Image 1: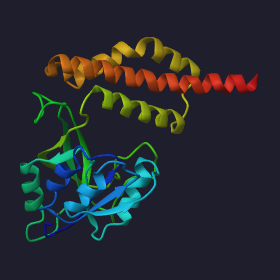
Image 2 (image 1 turned 90 degrees about the vertical axis):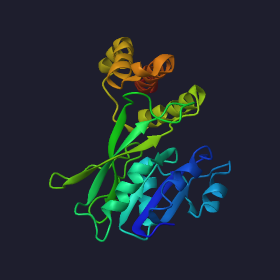
Image 3 (image 1 turned 180 degrees about the vertical axis):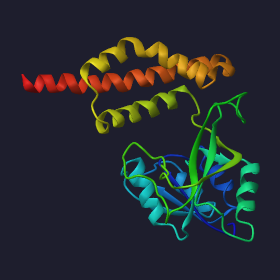
Image 4 (image 1 turned 45 degrees about the vertical axis):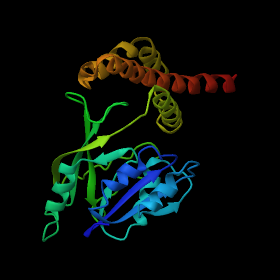
Length: 260
């Protein structure tokens, strides 16, 4: 393990595909690595333990609550959060080491660029999209929200947030089947937990949203640079949005049946 005053944590379930690489990318940084597992049936926990991580079992609480539970298991106040399919680039590892060199960071939280890497690829495509999110932070200042579907740290208005420049590589899916299963589960959770939108808005989104969401993914998220696979993922993204609205529409229809 590293010797920086950082606790790294990862929440997992059946993540044997990437968990080893994720842990390797933080093992020279964090003084402890905490894995909070919610019932893996593959070799996730065994791999994590072999890599020197501490594995704690905890039933699934939702994205935000599970990460808050993980935060509470950590020894240090400076926390580094990764998803189980994310790997810090060597440049980002060096940047974090430099940040803590001889002192504590001057700011209380830092954004990291989490950049998508396609299945069957080892590095991001040209102009790959990324999420610029707070993943390195002091938990005495801010924490993950207690929300089942929202797991992004939101800084307060007075907070100063630093920016790290190295990439965190997100190996989000081994293929389309995995991607489809993932967004099917997530859209079910979104439809159940998020505020139900008015009926007419859902009708408009179901009728006209698909092409707009495709354009958003293909052009704004720049999947256009990903060739035919980028086209496939853009269609899949648009369908996931359609599916969430369809599941919300079912709630309206179910309420109508109950009233009758």
